[in-house]
Length: 403
Ligand code: ARG
Image (cartoon, rainbow, N blue to C red; front, side, top):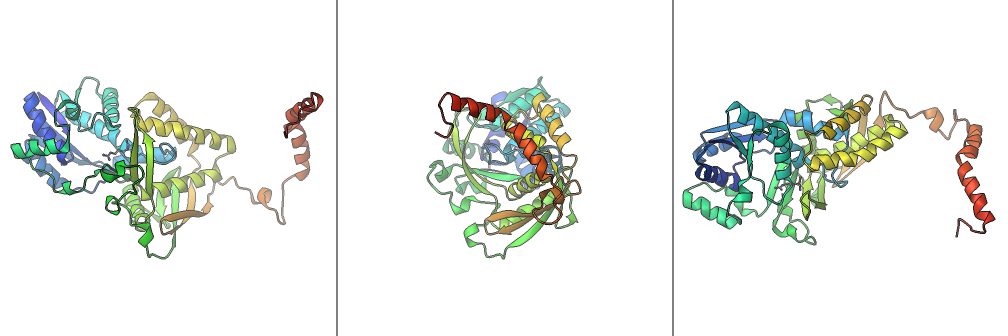
């Protein structure tokens, strides 16, 4: 038997490699994808081999992640439950796709992942795998084994000489990539407790930021960010720079309670400096270039789009259908948005586009007004007609709408 196992080098996946080998008498190929989490990939590869993998596949997925997952979500302004920019939920389908590709390439029988039985990530991995490679088996050791606590996993590792990551002193579960970071566990399980300062990774403490306020200008082409302060940048670099700049201002911290797919609520602490700024800028540019009905409709489906990403349905037909709509709306989402940054805060201060539907003549209250004020009277006569009829009836039957 041959298994391709998702591998991060952390405690769970290190124990997993050993456990899978023993339990299934299998050859293990580990797979590690770089989504911008900032880990030392050479060290991870070497460690996977030391832990007993016959082969360790590592690849840089950052560009693909940004182009095929992050930007499509940004075009939809997808924020789960109005807040979470979905960095983890967007990363999983890509990792699942690569796991399946590697499994096919090496003729493996199954893929394995290190997700727990009460999280969302198992849903994303497995639904993606079912879409892409329904013939492959999927193994989730954390749902199967008796190592139900971290202590038991550490004991298992020590007994078998498996290296334990040195980062264990922080009691957090962290998932980071170029679109954001999620921090869970430890004292944050108490909903009333403020996240401890050492939990944050991408952002400075906004209370101690000493930087003078500054403006940045983000340029978009067809809904995709392409430049920063007038300088054209490739997507990965643009996100890295923006994470750095906004992170230094302590921008992009979120602390929320969310509804998981499997039915429970959980406290989630997130960071996404570039994500929050880019969504805000993109929303603002759309306000200028989209007509009212499209804008209203698009805002409504933003929630559906976020939900389906969260729920692991990325490769399914609904995402493709909604994506086609979203992409169609982006044809004219080209222009620039200026944003002022200050400690822990950002505010849009300007926007411009060659496709702007903002008409100075129509909008102005000063000289040069082109709006036909007289036409408004006729408009209101018809627009209010049904309420005029209704109001008349209320009078007749002795009821008053204001009471
Ligand atoms: N709650 C988020 C989601 O389901 C983030 C999960 C991140 N995982 C972690 N180990 N911190 O997408």
